[in-house]
Structure formats: C-alpha cells, structure tokens
Image 1: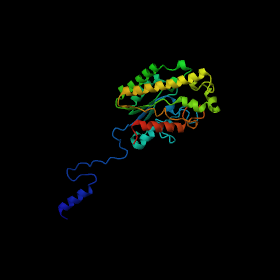
Image 2: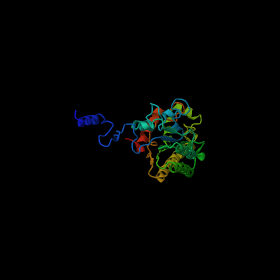
Image 3: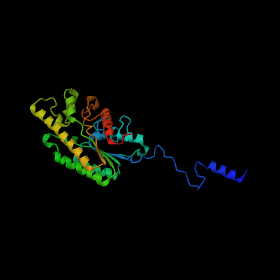
Image 4: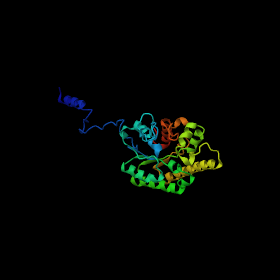
Length: 283
C-alpha cells in the first residue's frame, strides 16, 4: 500500500480526537450540563418563614424542601428546581438564610451570609413580621423598614455586585383575613397569637377592630412601595416582582391547616410560579 494511503488512513482513524493538520486537540462540543452564559450557579433565599416553607410539612416548623425559592422537593417547582432544569451545574448549590420571625432588620446579616456563600442569585421576601406584631403601634415604622431593607441590599451590592437579586412583594395578608374570618378552624388557630395586629378578634365588627385591620393593610401597601423603590435604587441587577406575590388571591386550600396563615405546598408552588415569571430567568 502506498505510504501516502497509510498516512491518510491513520489520519482518518484519529479524526475524532486529532486534527490532521497541526495535531491539536479537537474543540469539545458543549454539553447540556455546561453553564449557560450569564446563568446563576447558585441561589440563596433571604427573608422570613414563608421562604423556609414553614408548616408546609404539616408541622409548625420550617420545611425548606418546600420553599418557593430554594426548595429541592418534588412537590413544589421552586426557583431552584427551575434553574436545575436549565442547567444541572447548579445542583446542590442552594442556601436558605431566611428565618421564621425575621424582620427587615435581620436582612443585612442574612445578606452577608449569602455573600459568604458566593450566591449568584438571591431572592428577598421580607416584611410580614414587621406587620405581624402585637398591635398597630408595634409595627415597624415605614422609614425604618426602608432603612433596614437598604442596608441588606447594600450588603449584597457591595459583596456580590454581579449577583442577580429578586425582591418579592409582601403577600396580601389582609386577604387571608377576608377568606378565613368566617371559617371556625382558621379563627381558632389565629387565637393562639397568629399575626395579632391583623388577626386578633377576627370575627369582631367593632369599629376599632376594623380600623386596626385597615391600618395593617395600609402598612403592607407602604412597605411594598418601599420595596419597589429600594430595588430601583439598587440598580440594574435587581428586579422587583411587580407585585406578583401580593396579587396572588390566596384561598384556604393554599394554606396549611395548622395555623391557617403560612402557605402549604400548593401556596408555595403558586408563589414560585408567579415570582419566577418576574425573575428574568425564565426560558
């Protein structure tokens, strides 16, 4: 066989791994698991009990696998699970720093923890506990709430300037009173001290109680306006959900049957769905 044919056959046999001219390695084809350009490689949740999946496992404690943000369970299609569908490289890189009872003044510490985790995508849902105090006078003043949120976001912007941030509106807690105050199960649960500023004496029609509930509703609206402004001040790496979480029309079948306040898996799934649309990360 002519020598030049031998050389040609040898070159053909090695074509998958080598180029005939120059002998350099062939460029590997991108695989499905390769990180998408600009896609987050990790996710962190900041906030309160809602983001911990509290009571969604039918016990009055956190159940992070059902978190709308970082949950890895199969019953809620969380932001993490949606990101995992896009890119398997994010698998296991979730950090949930939300804590039951946390108010806006805890946000800075949580944000610093997310910075230490090198989080690429951070969700923020805070404010329910600033409202759910012993009474209207105990609610966090609007100016202080804004200052607390700003400090938390500043910690993120300083420590992780390229991270994507999603600020989520506070759900419509007044709506929970509307749908639950005629249900004896919910009223009994609320008497144990669930969000007393709003839900104490839930069946009362007294003028003072009606005024108290209205004040809570107005304070949530004021907080939500400050969340919009804080995200705008943060810059282009922050997105607000446009009121998507607040606009969810919660029904009793979206709440857990223990405190009739925190979302169950259905409610968590609904929060995940509406906020994902606003995240800028959807396909």
